[in-house]
Length: 113
Length: 112
Image (cartoon, rainbow over all chains, first blue to last red; front, side):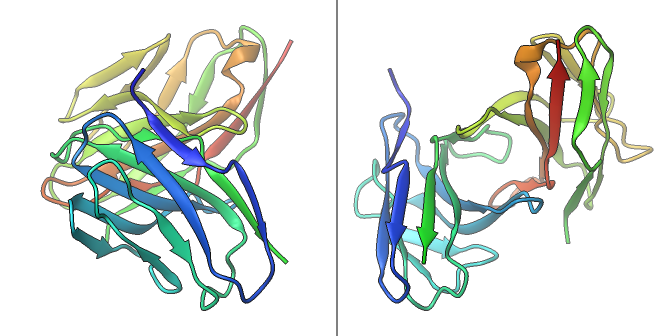
């Protein structure tokens, strides 16, 4: 079955450590996205990529970095510069085109203490 | 900029009650509108969409009509079930834009 896999489901880190969240898709989608979800704030766009080897900052990119070396993979690194990293992170993908629906992974809950 | 406003939750209903979740938006031009649903511990799933004024999106008994004159896209269902308990997100995207703009989500709790 095609879909998006995010791993791990739960992640715990100490403050000051970088951590990388995995996102893999086998839907053959060109576009991939990272969103952050906080209670009562909906989803906010961190980074997106429309093609391999290209990505753009979203609304809250500070303290995060991404890479897109393969079409299937779009890992997100939460760096120590991110002031409030504890959140639920969602990866999504879509075919190109504004009306294309997003397909989401099941998310990674990151807790930094 | 673009924005989506949803009614605050939680919305608590008894099984078989009628559901309305309000959604209004601010955007220039004619955006496409979406409703997504998130079940506990999962990602979001597309529930329905509408791409032009007066279009009605429908799926699994849920409906929403794109109202340009009131900039609204309210979600309705005639008879909710316990299994409908989830968080519902309204979202929009304008042609040529990079990604969806989401509302803050509305939690629905259906009691047996």
